[in-house]
Image 1 (spheres, helix red, strand yellow):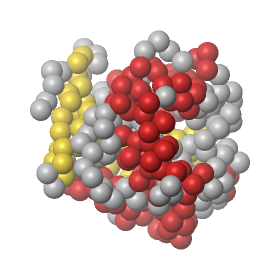
Image 2 (spheres, rainbow, N blue to C red):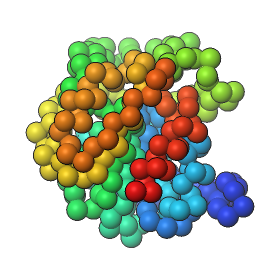
Image 3 (cartoon, rainbow, N blue to C red):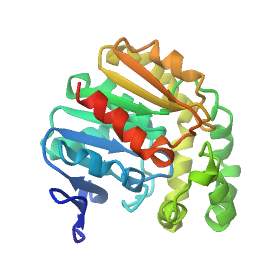
Length: 286
């Protein structure tokens, strides 16, 4: 199932690979050598989110950029448990298979929640956390919308409309930017192509179905990761996860640095990739 390698630099290349979870194939990109670093995308994202970051880290790290099972170009088995705990458990199983006992984790948005939950489940295995606008218990955005969109009556209508109305998809993506003029050519197409695959929006609904329950569990478990060195990166124009929640999250992690990027929305690795990569490189070099 592997695809030809795509050059990243003179010294590294990226490979598309697949890992089987109980018969379902999870796609991931692999590049570089060194300590393991895993990159976890957000809701309705996939490994494409990290195309600007992978070359920056493949020289010093063994990089794994996953399409979480159920999204991107990974398989989408029916009835998949998409709770934060289940996603984190699959992530740890994946890292076991990659012979990575201890690793650094970068997670954005929903992927930030998965990263934190993986650290909660196995704090001895996570060396450092980099959380980019992560979902968290102190952001009110989503608390009401998630149960509404995932309700038995609304969910089928939402899935049908989201799949068929391209303008809805584009609107959702553009509002994630602090300045939509920064959207680079090919970006919208890159994000939207896998959304047309069967099961993509059903996966999103499955995540929303346990949204509030997951955040309550995460809040109660945060004391387990209080001593993991953590970098928080946020855009002050984030329309998806409240920037005001950043300080509350930071207060719950002792070794935590917060960087608020000015004029940036929910996707700093898209809007300002060079600055984003510099921030991560500085943190991981300490």
